[in-house]
Image (cartoon, each protein chain N blue to C red):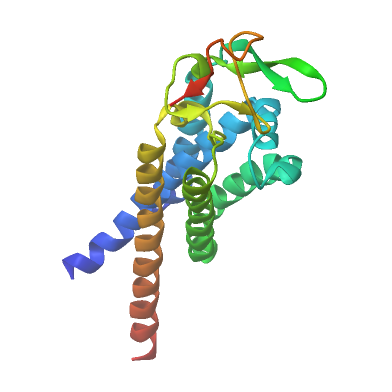
Length: 81
Length: 149
């Protein structure tokens, strides 16, 4: 009985719980628009996560380009934690 | 004797926690596979392998969590989980040390952890895998010794 519990019930319970939790905690990231200055194509717009508008530690970049809130280098440079 | 009795229970507990972690993160990645792939494409050093990684990592996680429950493959699964977590943790440390970009490809609610917390979290699970390997080997050696005597 104990062996059956360990072999069958426990893993099945763990898998169901994990899948359930994955769906339960599923949050669609809030997407906002950000901008970067491409040296040839000019200002480009991309979608970024909301976290880029609230953090302060690490630069949010698209490829190697710093992202800004507006199409201006004097606007808010985006960072996330 | 009592110490020998507790090892299999702890190994089962570690298996349970590792299964929860791997199935949860794999499911979270697969639910938003396109987002996971896009994030990988923006990450340094691995962007060229984004498609391959976006499929292989959740697949590996699911295979490992399955193998953990077959005694024959348990040791292999524990080694694999140690390697997988080790590679991911090393990558985070390298990126945080040498690159300006922010790595963020973890699944589900784990992505809300800070990077220091994330490294600690991974280290805790790596420790579980390592202890599982050591105790499984010990258990195997005791059984082998009992069979030969």
